[in-house]
Length: 304
Image (cartoon, rainbow, N blue to C red; front, side, top):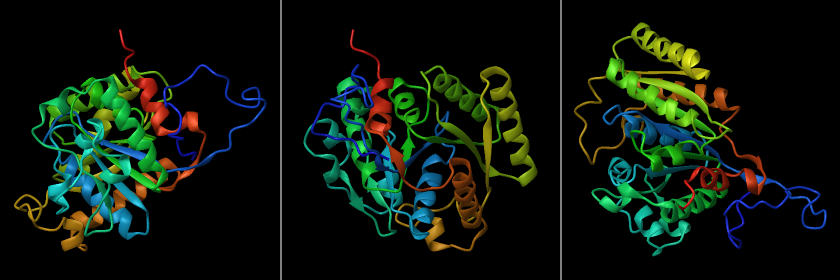
Protein backbone atom coordinates (compact mmCIF):
# COMPACT_ATOMS: atom_id res chain seq x y z
CA UNK A 1 0.00 0.00 0.00
CA UNK A 2 1.13 3.52 -0.71
CA UNK A 3 2.14 5.48 2.43
CA UNK A 4 0.62 8.90 2.58
CA UNK A 5 2.90 11.79 1.67
CA UNK A 6 2.63 14.20 4.59
CA UNK A 7 4.61 16.89 2.78
CA UNK A 8 1.38 17.92 1.08
CA UNK A 9 -2.17 18.48 2.33
CA UNK A 10 -4.14 15.28 2.75
CA UNK A 11 -7.40 16.88 1.76
CA UNK A 12 -8.80 14.98 -1.21
CA UNK A 13 -8.30 16.97 -4.37
CA UNK A 14 -10.20 17.16 -7.61
CA UNK A 15 -7.05 16.66 -9.66
CA UNK A 16 -6.92 13.71 -12.01
CA UNK A 17 -5.09 10.68 -10.70
CA UNK A 18 -3.09 8.62 -13.16
CA UNK A 19 -1.21 9.21 -16.39
CA UNK A 20 -3.27 12.29 -17.29
CA UNK A 21 -2.14 14.09 -14.15
CA UNK A 22 1.10 15.91 -13.40
CA UNK A 23 2.51 15.63 -16.88
CA UNK A 24 1.58 11.98 -17.36
CA UNK A 25 3.46 10.97 -14.20
CA UNK A 26 1.79 7.85 -12.83
CA UNK A 27 1.65 7.32 -9.10
CA UNK A 28 3.57 4.33 -7.82
CA UNK A 29 1.92 2.30 -5.04
CA UNK A 30 3.81 1.39 -1.89
CA UNK A 31 2.70 -0.77 1.01
CA UNK A 32 0.22 0.13 3.72
CA UNK A 33 -0.98 -2.07 6.56
CA UNK A 34 -4.22 -3.95 6.47
CA UNK A 35 -6.50 -1.94 8.75
CA UNK A 36 -9.17 -3.64 10.87
CA UNK A 37 -11.59 -1.78 13.13
CA UNK A 38 -12.87 -3.65 16.18
CA UNK A 39 -16.33 -2.20 16.84
CA UNK A 40 -19.52 -2.74 18.81
CA UNK A 41 -22.93 -1.21 19.09
CA UNK A 42 -22.81 -0.89 22.86
CA UNK A 43 -20.23 -0.81 25.62
CA UNK A 44 -19.44 -3.88 27.66
CA UNK A 45 -19.36 -6.42 24.85
CA UNK A 46 -15.68 -7.24 25.38
CA UNK A 47 -14.44 -5.22 22.41
CA UNK A 48 -11.22 -3.98 24.05
CA UNK A 49 -10.54 -7.41 25.54
CA UNK A 50 -10.74 -8.90 22.04
CA UNK A 51 -8.73 -6.10 20.41
CA UNK A 52 -5.80 -6.34 22.83
CA UNK A 53 -5.68 -10.12 22.77
CA UNK A 54 -5.95 -10.30 18.97
CA UNK A 55 -3.10 -7.80 18.71
CA UNK A 56 -0.88 -9.94 20.95
CA UNK A 57 -1.65 -13.11 19.01
CA UNK A 58 -0.88 -11.33 15.74
CA UNK A 59 2.40 -9.92 17.05
CA UNK A 60 3.50 -13.27 18.43
CA UNK A 61 2.79 -14.89 15.08
CA UNK A 62 5.30 -12.54 13.47
CA UNK A 63 3.12 -9.64 12.31
CA UNK A 64 4.26 -6.03 12.74
CA UNK A 65 1.04 -5.13 14.54
CA UNK A 66 -0.03 -1.71 15.83
CA UNK A 67 -3.09 -1.23 18.02
CA UNK A 68 -4.76 2.20 17.99
CA UNK A 69 -7.07 2.97 20.89
CA UNK A 70 -9.68 5.07 19.11
CA UNK A 71 -12.29 4.79 21.85
CA UNK A 72 -12.25 8.58 22.05
CA UNK A 73 -12.42 9.74 25.66
CA UNK A 74 -12.98 6.24 27.10
CA UNK A 75 -9.70 4.50 26.31
CA UNK A 76 -8.49 1.48 28.28
CA UNK A 77 -6.06 -0.46 26.09
CA UNK A 78 -2.99 1.04 27.82
CA UNK A 79 -4.28 -0.36 31.12
CA UNK A 80 -4.94 -3.79 29.62
CA UNK A 81 -1.43 -3.86 28.10
CA UNK A 82 0.39 -2.46 31.12
CA UNK A 83 1.62 0.75 29.48
CA UNK A 84 2.04 4.16 31.12
CA UNK A 85 1.87 6.39 28.04
CA UNK A 86 3.89 9.56 27.60
CA UNK A 87 1.89 10.73 24.59
CA UNK A 88 -1.64 9.86 23.49
CA UNK A 89 -4.11 10.61 20.72
CA UNK A 90 -5.05 13.71 22.72
CA UNK A 91 -1.51 15.07 22.22
CA UNK A 92 -1.82 14.39 18.50
CA UNK A 93 -5.13 16.19 18.01
CA UNK A 94 -4.04 19.14 20.17
CA UNK A 95 -0.83 19.55 18.17
CA UNK A 96 1.66 18.64 20.91
CA UNK A 97 2.98 15.45 19.29
CA UNK A 98 3.60 13.97 15.87
CA UNK A 99 2.10 10.56 15.08
CA UNK A 100 5.41 8.75 15.62
CA UNK A 101 5.71 10.19 19.13
CA UNK A 102 2.39 8.58 20.12
CA UNK A 103 3.63 5.04 19.42
CA UNK A 104 4.54 3.02 22.50
CA UNK A 105 6.17 -0.37 22.76
CA UNK A 106 4.39 -2.89 25.01
CA UNK A 107 5.71 -5.94 26.85
CA UNK A 108 3.83 -8.18 24.41
CA UNK A 109 5.34 -7.20 21.05
CA UNK A 110 2.42 -4.96 20.06
CA UNK A 111 2.94 -1.28 19.42
CA UNK A 112 0.20 0.83 20.99
CA UNK A 113 -1.21 4.25 20.20
CA UNK A 114 -3.02 4.99 23.46
CA UNK A 115 -6.09 7.10 23.94
CA UNK A 116 -7.24 8.96 27.03
CA UNK A 117 -10.05 8.52 29.52
CA UNK A 118 -12.45 11.11 30.88
CA UNK A 119 -11.56 13.88 28.42
CA UNK A 120 -14.82 15.36 27.21
CA UNK A 121 -13.15 17.18 24.30
CA UNK A 122 -12.30 13.81 22.74
CA UNK A 123 -15.94 12.80 22.91
CA UNK A 124 -16.85 15.70 20.60
CA UNK A 125 -14.11 15.72 17.98
CA UNK A 126 -14.48 18.13 15.08
CA UNK A 127 -13.26 17.94 11.52
CA UNK A 128 -9.84 19.41 12.31
CA UNK A 129 -9.16 16.91 15.09
CA UNK A 130 -10.38 13.96 13.00
CA UNK A 131 -8.21 15.19 10.15
CA UNK A 132 -5.20 14.93 12.48
CA UNK A 133 -6.21 11.41 13.49
CA UNK A 134 -6.54 10.44 9.81
CA UNK A 135 -2.99 11.65 9.21
CA UNK A 136 -1.86 9.60 12.17
CA UNK A 137 -3.59 6.46 10.88
CA UNK A 138 -1.86 6.93 7.54
CA UNK A 139 1.57 7.15 9.17
CA UNK A 140 0.97 4.25 11.56
CA UNK A 141 -0.19 2.10 8.65
CA UNK A 142 3.01 2.89 6.82
CA UNK A 143 5.04 1.40 9.67
CA UNK A 144 2.95 -1.75 10.16
CA UNK A 145 1.65 -4.85 8.45
CA UNK A 146 -1.54 -5.00 10.52
CA UNK A 147 -3.28 -2.02 12.12
CA UNK A 148 -6.03 -2.83 14.62
CA UNK A 149 -8.31 0.05 15.59
CA UNK A 150 -10.16 -0.33 18.89
CA UNK A 151 -13.07 1.93 17.96
CA UNK A 152 -15.59 3.50 20.30
CA UNK A 153 -18.97 1.88 20.82
CA UNK A 154 -22.07 3.42 19.29
CA UNK A 155 -22.98 5.45 16.22
CA UNK A 156 -21.48 8.89 16.89
CA UNK A 157 -20.23 10.58 13.73
CA UNK A 158 -16.56 10.50 14.77
CA UNK A 159 -16.80 6.79 15.55
CA UNK A 160 -18.49 5.91 12.26
CA UNK A 161 -16.02 8.04 10.26
CA UNK A 162 -13.14 6.14 11.83
CA UNK A 163 -14.63 2.67 11.43
CA UNK A 164 -15.72 3.04 7.81
CA UNK A 165 -12.19 4.04 6.73
CA UNK A 166 -10.81 0.62 7.69
CA UNK A 167 -10.33 -2.24 5.24
CA UNK A 168 -12.37 -4.53 7.46
CA UNK A 169 -14.61 -4.32 10.52
CA UNK A 170 -15.00 -6.88 13.30
CA UNK A 171 -18.31 -6.40 15.11
CA UNK A 172 -18.20 -7.76 18.66
CA UNK A 173 -21.62 -8.80 19.93
CA UNK A 174 -23.18 -10.81 22.70
CA UNK A 175 -26.19 -13.05 22.31
CA UNK A 176 -28.81 -10.83 23.93
CA UNK A 177 -31.17 -8.99 21.62
CA UNK A 178 -30.03 -5.53 22.76
CA UNK A 179 -26.45 -6.23 21.65
CA UNK A 180 -27.56 -7.60 18.26
CA UNK A 181 -29.91 -4.65 17.71
CA UNK A 182 -27.15 -2.15 18.50
CA UNK A 183 -24.74 -3.95 16.18
CA UNK A 184 -27.30 -3.71 13.38
CA UNK A 185 -27.57 0.03 14.04
CA UNK A 186 -23.81 0.37 13.55
CA UNK A 187 -24.00 -1.57 10.28
CA UNK A 188 -26.87 0.60 9.10
CA UNK A 189 -24.91 3.80 9.77
CA UNK A 190 -21.81 2.42 8.06
CA UNK A 191 -23.73 1.37 4.95
CA UNK A 192 -25.23 4.85 4.65
CA UNK A 193 -21.75 6.25 4.14
CA UNK A 194 -20.33 6.56 0.61
CA UNK A 195 -18.69 3.47 -0.89
CA UNK A 196 -16.35 1.69 -0.78
CA UNK A 197 -17.42 -0.09 2.38
CA UNK A 198 -15.27 -2.41 4.52
CA UNK A 199 -15.72 -6.12 4.76
CA UNK A 200 -17.67 -7.11 7.87
CA UNK A 201 -17.02 -9.96 10.27
CA UNK A 202 -18.77 -10.85 13.52
CA UNK A 203 -17.45 -12.31 16.77
CA UNK A 204 -19.92 -13.48 19.40
CA UNK A 205 -18.38 -12.94 22.83
CA UNK A 206 -19.26 -14.70 26.09
CA UNK A 207 -21.04 -17.44 24.18
CA UNK A 208 -22.62 -20.21 26.26
CA UNK A 209 -22.01 -22.71 23.44
CA UNK A 210 -20.90 -22.88 19.83
CA UNK A 211 -24.51 -23.54 18.81
CA UNK A 212 -25.77 -20.45 20.66
CA UNK A 213 -23.04 -18.32 19.06
CA UNK A 214 -23.92 -19.58 15.58
CA UNK A 215 -27.61 -18.85 16.18
CA UNK A 216 -26.81 -15.28 17.25
CA UNK A 217 -24.62 -14.74 14.21
CA UNK A 218 -27.31 -16.15 11.92
CA UNK A 219 -29.91 -13.71 13.28
CA UNK A 220 -27.71 -10.68 12.66
CA UNK A 221 -26.49 -11.94 9.29
CA UNK A 222 -30.02 -12.57 8.06
CA UNK A 223 -31.24 -9.09 8.98
CA UNK A 224 -28.14 -7.45 7.48
CA UNK A 225 -28.58 -9.35 4.22
CA UNK A 226 -32.31 -8.68 3.89
CA UNK A 227 -32.41 -5.01 4.87
CA UNK A 228 -28.91 -3.70 4.11
CA UNK A 229 -27.78 -6.00 1.32
CA UNK A 230 -24.51 -6.77 3.11
CA UNK A 231 -22.90 -10.14 3.76
CA UNK A 232 -21.39 -10.80 7.17
CA UNK A 233 -18.56 -13.27 7.83
CA UNK A 234 -18.68 -15.57 10.84
CA UNK A 235 -15.31 -15.13 12.55
CA UNK A 236 -16.17 -17.38 15.47
CA UNK A 237 -16.90 -16.89 19.13
CA UNK A 238 -15.30 -16.51 22.55
CA UNK A 239 -16.85 -18.76 25.18
CA UNK A 240 -18.00 -17.69 28.60
CA UNK A 241 -14.84 -18.40 30.57
CA UNK A 242 -14.47 -18.31 34.36
CA UNK A 243 -10.83 -17.24 33.99
CA UNK A 244 -11.78 -14.06 32.09
CA UNK A 245 -14.37 -12.29 34.23
CA UNK A 246 -12.42 -11.98 37.52
CA UNK A 247 -9.23 -10.68 35.90
CA UNK A 248 -7.89 -7.46 37.38
CA UNK A 249 -5.94 -4.56 35.92
CA UNK A 250 -2.23 -5.24 36.09
CA UNK A 251 -2.60 -8.88 35.12
CA UNK A 252 -1.20 -9.87 31.72
CA UNK A 253 -3.76 -10.37 28.93
CA UNK A 254 -5.16 -13.87 28.86
CA UNK A 255 -3.44 -15.01 25.65
CA UNK A 256 -0.11 -14.11 27.28
CA UNK A 257 -0.72 -15.56 30.75
CA UNK A 258 -2.74 -18.64 29.71
CA UNK A 259 -1.91 -19.27 26.02
CA UNK A 260 -3.37 -22.79 26.01
CA UNK A 261 -6.70 -22.01 27.69
CA UNK A 262 -9.91 -22.32 25.70
CA UNK A 263 -10.31 -18.55 25.26
CA UNK A 264 -6.79 -18.16 23.87
CA UNK A 265 -7.39 -21.00 21.40
CA UNK A 266 -10.64 -19.38 20.27
CA UNK A 267 -8.95 -16.00 19.79
CA UNK A 268 -6.22 -17.55 17.66
CA UNK A 269 -8.95 -19.20 15.58
CA UNK A 270 -10.66 -15.81 15.14
CA UNK A 271 -7.40 -14.32 13.86
CA UNK A 272 -7.05 -17.13 11.31
CA UNK A 273 -10.61 -16.56 10.06
CA UNK A 274 -9.97 -12.81 9.90
CA UNK A 275 -6.98 -13.53 7.66
CA UNK A 276 -9.16 -15.64 5.36
CA UNK A 277 -11.83 -12.91 5.19
CA UNK A 278 -9.32 -10.20 4.31
CA UNK A 279 -7.07 -12.20 2.01
CA UNK A 280 -4.18 -12.22 4.49
CA UNK A 281 -3.11 -10.12 7.47
CA UNK A 282 -0.41 -8.34 5.51
CA UNK A 283 0.29 -4.94 4.05
CA UNK A 284 -0.62 -4.41 0.43
CA UNK A 285 0.02 -1.95 -2.40
CA UNK A 286 -2.16 1.14 -2.23
CA UNK A 287 -2.06 4.44 -4.08
CA UNK A 288 -1.99 7.58 -1.91
CA UNK A 289 -5.58 8.39 -2.84
CA UNK A 290 -6.66 4.91 -1.68
CA UNK A 291 -4.94 4.87 1.72
CA UNK A 292 -6.70 4.96 5.07
CA UNK A 293 -5.96 8.67 5.59
CA UNK A 294 -7.69 9.70 2.37
CA UNK A 295 -10.54 7.28 2.93
CA UNK A 296 -11.25 8.70 6.37
CA UNK A 297 -11.01 12.31 5.24
CA UNK A 298 -13.51 11.68 2.46
CA UNK A 299 -15.94 10.48 5.14
CA UNK A 300 -15.70 13.59 7.30
CA UNK A 301 -18.57 16.10 7.16
CA UNK A 302 -17.75 19.17 5.12
CA UNK A 303 -17.55 22.47 7.00
CA UNK A 304 -20.69 24.56 6.69
